[in-house]
Length: 556
Image 1 (tube, one colour):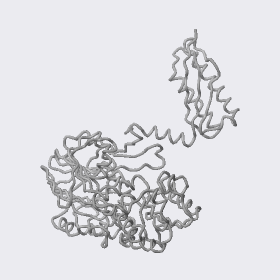
Image 2 (cartoon, one colour; image 1 turned 180 degrees about the vertical axis):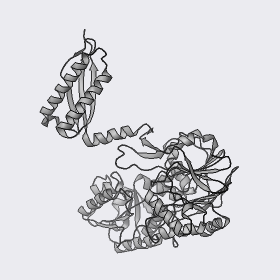
Image 3 (tube, one colour; image 1 turned 90 degrees about the vertical axis):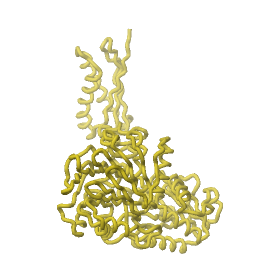
Image 4 (cartoon, rainbow, N blue to C red; image 1 turned 90 degrees about the horizontal axis):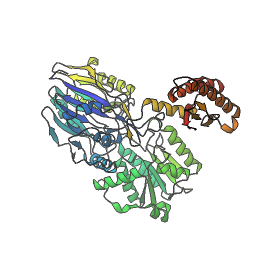
């Protein structure tokens, strides 16, 4: 990097939905925007989260000034506890709702961090090279903001997650401030691409609220069970207000729902706490006087609604006249889980409302194409780089930018780690930093490699075959026939002939290796695995994980 140039790059969030983390650097100062997690695909067996690789930040932590948070969703704040254990972050600035959620996370992880501060759109932050301001946006969680960072080589605007809702339940996005920043001049706009494939304008949250209210009115005599995203505070607020209007009490089910309602009350979004009751109280009231507000809108097996649907919930059992509302739409990859839950509910004979053509009971928090164009027009940037999305979303968003008069050569489709270098004369893609995936498995961060994941996939598909071998290494003797056992490969009781063949082949290989001068267990294990793999594939068409286990028994 030339001394007077500014670097902009992503450690996560490009070519994927989640794991958002962006970096702006000028000389010896670094600003980080967001620190999210990504939830693993089904093939990442045993993995809890995927987080960005923090290597670059570890190597340059003396240059970090701030971590700035756009809003409180997991894909923007979920990585903070992991980041703080590996990198020194001098200060974190977050909007009010996000700050409460971050504090809760740090408390659960017993991380003592004192430099977490709140900002609003009137806050201005200054460093030696950066002048930072914020603008309010509309999203599916309160206190969402975009960030404008004035650098020595022009202003970089990062929209955060947004939509334009002209009849929102919460505050309006601050269009005038966006236009004002755009009028001053924006060098580079980086804009949310999540819904870039969706034409038109996203549904207003007020329409969703109206339709939910109508369902409540049409089912006055029934108990209502409602599942939605726990983070969508404005929808939770409306649901609770609708329950109050319909003289219903609200019982909460699910840890994240409890947390969200607690924070909503603390931040003043929900004012009447008396409407919220316990599960025990809910079971004592008439069905028409109760609404059960649940997690599980994505069909998560352990979430409240899934357990209610399967009949395994300890406190709530379905009633014949129950009405279940999914005020959500499946996140990509969750459709199968949601369908399973819905089918279980239908089998129980309850009435189910889902979002669709007949019932508009969910609205995305991300902008559709016409809203994306409006954002580009408001800021009127010289250069454009879409972010937060898979490649097809980024590509489509770039095409929209060219329709809004940004020259094609002034647009960039980046991958994680690609550096945009800003100078007085222009912006170009130049260089790369480390920006891979780190797997979190329980309390282990980064210990699970691709080889381990590959082994887990192999075990899940083909099973495990263990061979227990007792050897007297002093006298170089095999003490008895190897014992073979399997899990998930073949049934031992029904595959006696195959098991016998494996034992005899293992016995032959071990005896041969024991006769060699430089005998060792490592070579013997390799020889066993290398000989058994083609044999097993020929016999069964599958190769399990093969685990030779040697017991060294010394005899006098």
